[in-house]
Length: 265
Ligand code: IPD
Ligand code: CA
Ligand code: CA
Ligand code: CA
Image (cartoon, rainbow, N blue to C red; front, side, top):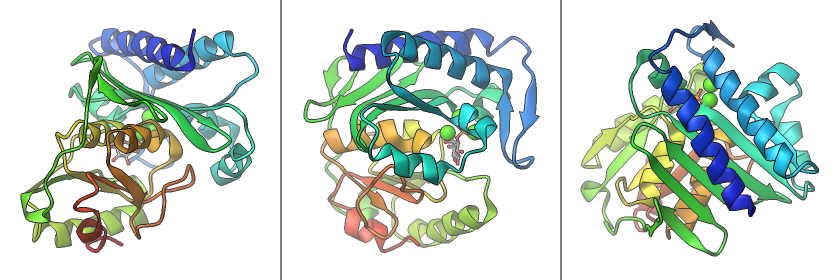
């Protein structure tokens, strides 16, 4: 099985588990604050993906959102080490937990593979719409088997931008400031509740851009490769090149990127 096939299979298997559990009761707990929740389904999804990937590729390393929270090792340290890691899987078992908890569709499973810090495979799966977005380094980006590419708008005034609201208050403040500036310049703004889905939608041309401050590698790694392979640009909010350590993500179709970044902090 190829790495891409492993990622797709695990995203689909986890996606059906999450979808099945949507209407059943599930335990929810708060992590760093009441703004930051996790459910038993997030943990079950991560466990399923971790076991499935390590069964296929036992010598690979795995970084998942929920496991990293438990292990307590500083994430930046793990990601710095990742630059030398031949195979590191970066997984968000449910991106959009708040949507999931509220019974709002639009959460995704996000699975990326980084080889010595370079993204090589990215898969974002929306189990409710059964939409599988994926990209492989140098091979383009796809939605359910069809090639996708970024939208063609070259003005912010003709662009639909998305953002999200991080649980960290400093990052939330930065999003708020960007929102104020962008609302004066772009056609409209959406917040769909999953960073991975926002990025996949930039790749598919459904959105022209997405930014959010304070995200982590598991939120954006898979989606960042999808945007790049669909012909878009991914940087931080200052326009610096994307890496696994990037927290303030900015992705667009490329044509609006300079104007977009100039509205952000
Ligand atoms: C969250 C989602 C959301 C974003 C938050 C993230 P989670 O991830 O991506 O869209 O606004 O900042 O933390 O916690 O649902 O995996
Ligand atoms: Ca979370
Ligand atoms: Ca996430
Ligand atoms: Ca998550």
